Image 1 (tube, rainbow, N blue to C red):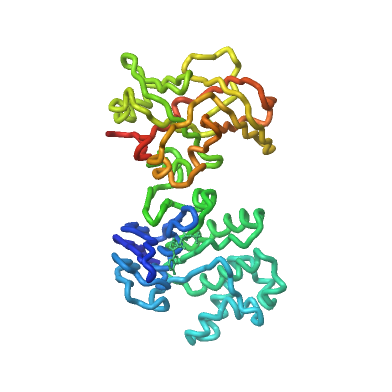
Image 2 (spheres, rainbow, N blue to C red):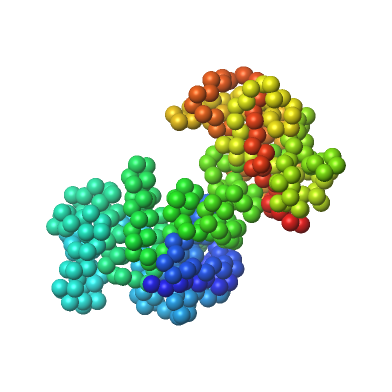
Length: 397
Ligand code: ATP
């Protein structure tokens, strides 16, 4: 086991495509690091450079105290789990798991010991003499994990290892991979486009977009303090609502005006974000997570802690309901710069005609119906603020 460092790593493919730019990440010994981002963000390329399957155009990759840029994959002492498990169909589970050890001419007894230990960890002991075709999808995935465990590498590199499994199995295997990694304490990089996998598995998560690191932080920090609109929109489901308003100040109190409505900003929120002071009178995006919008009685109207909205769509999900609302907040016009900052059109600033839609997560007890005019309480202590031009979160200046 070892720590693993990427220093100013960049990748330009032979056809000139730049896939990764100036990526610097220190991964601690035994840490579970997730690279997450939308398709094409460069996460697989970054992983393959660590594995030695792609050359490194710029910068340095270190595993332990060795710079590995020019080492072939087999000398890097890392083990990779791919999307397709690529098991050998004609070999038993035992032989599949032990295959790489056999290639290295390890003694039979030691191979058997390691294979049986891995099978025990993975609950595969009874299946050791079966062929892959007689296993379920989850069992095949475990065999693929077994193959990397027996090698006792310095690091595990996993590229979307669960994407071939159905939804239920994916959740189960996700928990198993998390448990296994904690037990074995092997430094791990795990690549996924799924923010739930990233949040549940990572000790820390690196969010990538267009080959550039957006934020590197523990999951809860990404959620509570996204560095920019892209991270705010990517982490959390449904995505954070992003409404453009104008920041105003009345003595010591700040408020955000949203169309004809407004929200008071609690003192502790402005205190944590001294950068808001410089934005008075300016367009500012307020971010509100769907779970921070709750159905309220109509009594509390216009007190700066709720918004009046019309219900556009109701999606029951069992435990809760997603309620799509329009609160008459005009959609920002001519915001090419914002679209650029956000990246994925529709992820954060979805556009329905001229209004910014909002999604609220209400409890299943809610009886709201399409067309209702409702009062929605906003947890104003959990508001987020962003600069509409740069997409950056407003904290200091
Ligand atoms: P996905 O989840 O879709 O696999 P990703 O985030 O892993 O996406 P990469 O596969 O790393 O992204 O690709 C990053 C960028 O590099 C993309 O624009 C992709 O088209 C490009 N790319 C990947 N492989 C090559 C290649 N061999 N030659 C040229 N460009 C490539």
